Length: 481
Image 1 (cartoon, rainbow, N blue to C red):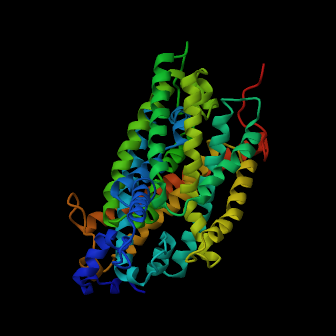
Image 2 (tube, rainbow, N blue to C red):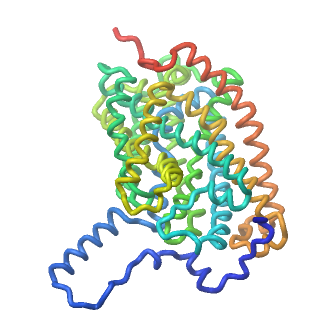
Image 3 (cartoon, rainbow, N blue to C red):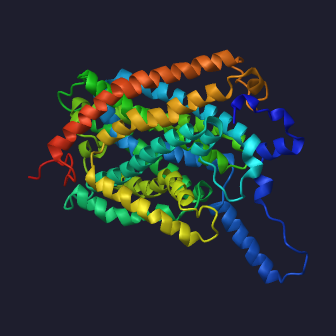
């Protein structure tokens, strides 16, 4: 379908209302007015209350919880390593830059998604979860679908793998009697819990807990490093090389790639249109955690962080550090599920069971995907380098390059722009300005992300494989006395 032929002016008033507020479609009216025993009514109301409070959430606050919880987790532990690679000033600048770019692309993706809903939403089955590759197929045809599926397959699987690797790396600092590879094997079954949650709407309780956990970890790192003080003779000589500099930049672009789940998270909201603001607030909150923790740890330990991709490695073992390790591991159990969820849904659609009412059948289809990710985490346990590799290729192309290009194509005609559900924001006011920003993002990520960043991450990952080998037993473990 040619995007220039899309016109939203044909909607009736009720269609527009449904797009803005879908909460009414999620509520079910009683089937009859027959008299029901009081005990049954009480039990039903109790179950409804529990479901509403702990389980089934589609509000803007729920979306913020999911977005913020997904955005920041194990990256807290390796951002000081990134600062050592780039230097303090560049580390802070790139976090602000990619935070703004991520917020912009989330806005772009929301706009395209709303246009898709306006034309196709009424044709979707009630329990269908729309994904970005379906939006791409509608506007760009088979090549858009194929490119998105490939990048999302690689990006989401590697992001889920990173959660497993990070869990094992963190657990090692509580009990180093087990090497990191063994910890990956031990913790894998707990990660499987994330397979059991059906959709982002069901993460309310876990995402709320995740925000508390990551906030504790971030401020533990900040306070512990400040109390510890600077190492005697500490040096801050970053960046050490062009390769190190762009390795750090690639890790930061991965850190702020959470808008890749825009369609899934917006689709789980009662009011999908609000997600563009939700994600912006999630990024602001993320910066309140990443900037203080990364800068303080780097200030205290300097170049020593170059050889410690995990910030726990340089902090003394205390009950507070052990608590931080436990909390980050628990959070990553459920973040793994949130990261892998779009991947799982893709597989459900591939096997033709996405619309099935048999929940256990869907769980069974997710198990092979989980086992593949688990195997890859054991094979490539390079905490830090694989974050950068994901950022320079999969995150850059899938959640920066393609969304901006798609927006430019969809709204290339004057007719499509006039009938767009989302007009340019008040601080731009013109479509030409939006095109300039999109083009700037595309050029930046192609040159800095895929180009120079790709060279740096491939060189580094190849070196790690040669040094430690595949299925490394204990990556970057200090020698035992």
